[in-house]
Image (cartoon, rainbow, N blue to C red):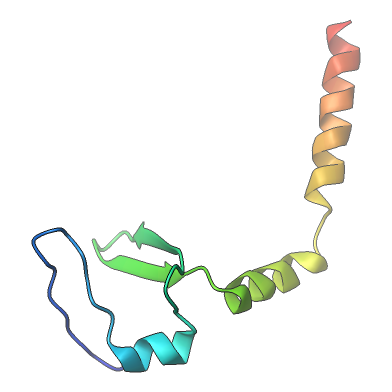
Length: 81
């Protein structure tokens, strides 16, 4: 793990070092998720195309969530009649 530091501005903005931006494909307008773990650490997750593709790849072999939701929704509607 490489350690780098940065400082927040008075507006709450944070500068991510250029080396990390290049490595992770962070460009102007890239959205991020901020996650707080059980140890109180804040994790910054860039939502880049690569990240989305990687997540979608993990889900590709899993259940079809939309079809499952539609089935449950249909069954619930039939029970409510």
